[in-house]
Image 1 (cartoon, rainbow, N blue to C red):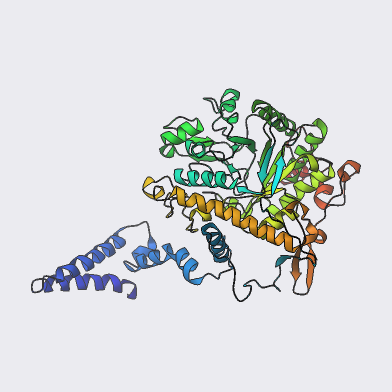
Image 2: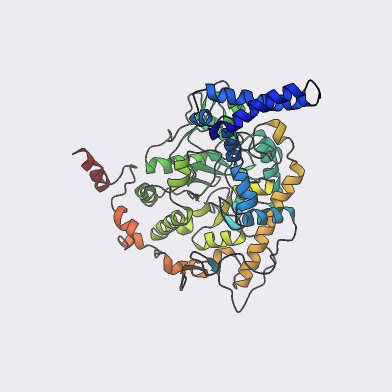
Length: 540
């Protein structure tokens, strides 16, 4: 009967307070409190949806209350400074400090376990260099009519709709002030992207938002209207994103506001569907032909695609199509499985797609092996926060890096993980005007610019310590990783790097190339016969 003690006590105290109220009016307050608890317990006993509430009337609600604030309790009182879930307090603090322009030096010593497995560092030089400028850039689309000189650190794809109007404004103004680009995300170019005039990379997804006809198919006419804007510097076709690769999406009709409908080119009052696949092409060759057409329609702006690596034979099919047709994207952005999103199924976030390091290496190696690497620029995204993150990623083959959540922290995001329920406490990832109107665009845009600026200053200082002058000089031999308490390896020795043209001479002794390169097809994304045969054994 102990399970019912709280309920019984509430009943008894409610009655007691009712009697005392005849003598002391203040007792009516007790009647209200304990009466409410008694009514709650009665309802718990009568309802049938929750067995826990029937077995523990009143008490069960204390459990629900503690459970609801569990993430906050862990984040503020229990988590260690270096526990990444998904970003550590140390990582977030670094962004906040650099965004605010306050001191970001660390006292006393590192909190990292330098003898722990997976600890990484960059070796310094006995002959450090001196570099004045931290404005490191890479030219994308050098052979196109309108090449673009991009910063090595930019804002990753985040759509208006996922982010608030003021968040988009602040990001774009920060990008304009700092001279780096702002990826629109697949939700197309909103008025808030245009308002401040910062450089844009227009991301086009399978829904063709901003360039679709009434049936949701690609529209050349509408594409040209947006693509030829001087503010749009590059065109990025999204094949998949790291947090939910191979998964479409639906924005319910109730959330399709007039602004979102106008931005995406969809009707109000109807679900806004992002299909899992593109309708404009169905083969690797078709993809490259579509990329070439987008480049032509945009007036020769650098055009490429973003993907999260999944089945290796599909990427190999695209690479073979490049080699066979001579149709090349100006750039490829590799999105790692550790990338973030506003909302995705748990299984997709935790267990679908290749992490960024392995995905980047596969893309880099393939292009090197086909002698195409010098003609195709490669960007990378996936939990990039610090200057060391940028250095390591570029050492593994990237020409530049993008960050999404890092710039969200610069806007004031506190990692409340409320992106999916429209209750973002800082006004960053919400469409509730009562929340996002309090995000001060003038202040936050400065923080966005300062986070970018101070991170690249830290990258410059790290490069100088290593005896280098530009991040393009970074290679896998510069980054060391502890693989056991008594063994350290460079990334150059941990990973197999192909030699230029190696794929043109035969199949290298690299497991994934050995297994899938020969059978990959440029005319289809279909799996190799051997893979299909293994699946067929289940039906025998």
